[in-house]
Image (cartoon, rainbow, N blue to C red; front, side):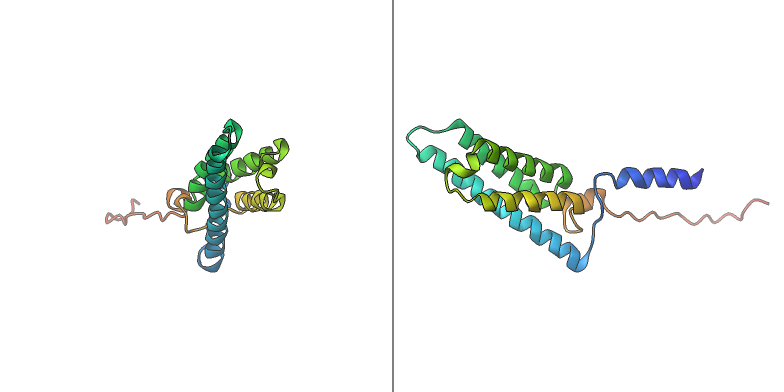
Length: 152
């Protein structure tokens, strides 16, 4: 009974987060998150500002730019990583489907790269250097020593 309960608990914990690696793998995941976040924030700010510079501001371009900015912040911090990274992939894929990613610069390769990084991070996990690691990461359970002798 005890081992089944432990397996059930472990399965629930690892459903959203696969691992929180430390050291170089953790730094590699942090680097990927920061690179993706920088892409999203700069791209979102550029597209939002560009929508207002046009003679007729486009609500779609503004919404797309704001969505990239809003998603870029939790990506950088590593907050709710699997959910946010899947949302990044969905927003970027939808933008390519309707042509928003191609309207301003035509560099579809960058959008595909962002989708790939976001999906890879969603599958691997946020790493040890993230808010998710602090909220859902490794825990140490301390069992207090009982000073009473065991009952016979």
